[in-house]
Image 1: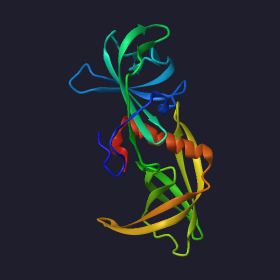
Image 2: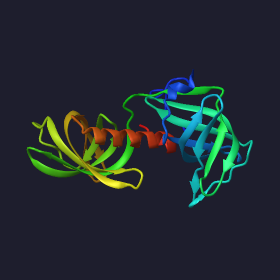
Image 3: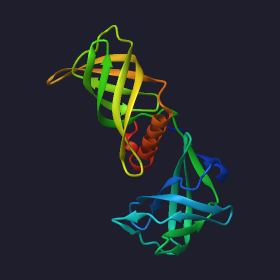
Image 4: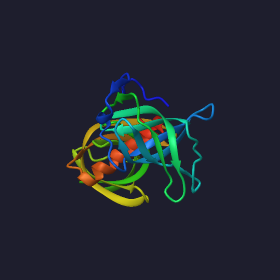
Amino acid sequence: MHVGQAHELKPEDYDFETMNLQVGTRLQFITHRRVKPVQHFSSLIGYVKDEYIILKIPMENGAPIALTEGERLTIRVFSGVKVCSFACTVERVFARPLFYVHVSFPKSVQGTSLRTAMRVKVDLPAQLAGSGGSQACNIVNLSVTGALIESKRRLPQDDDTLTLQFVLKAPPDDQEVKVNTRASIRNVNVVQAGDGETFTYGVQFIDLDPVHYTLLQNMTYEALLADRQKIV
């Protein structure tokens, strides 16, 4: 999938340590046994530098995917403001009950720099509250710094700061977390549609809770790994 030039630069070579991999780091696990590479998700168990890396075997439909020794893989991981990837091969498979795999230590790592505040396409119901009371709206994209909001009603023009409330799902079990934050209006547009006018508001979060910031970071990360077409 493609993220436009506004979002990323040309790939560069990086040291393995640049990725700052920690136990439990979520990563994309790509197999190449078909014409089109197949993407799975895995996590890091550990590694011995210059020898091997230990990964959880990805699960599919409740069962571990089949892997064979010598099979070629690509591993991709989001690290800070970079997406890093490297090639490796399966060295040894440890099946039931552990389900982990030793893969070769990479000879090289390529990384692509990204914008620090990428926006992700979403469709989230939300509530906006200002001097004129509360009204329903829809969030159409989100980042760690702000959101783009659509509303059928115009907000009071003297409102520079609002309260925005919406729900995010927290991994790993999609538990709902209510986000309630102040936001300042940065821009306003009016879109003519078949059913009348829609007002769009670009807002910037004010003093976002660090827990909610981390959730938004994770959402961006998931979009980068799973469906980069969601990146605005």
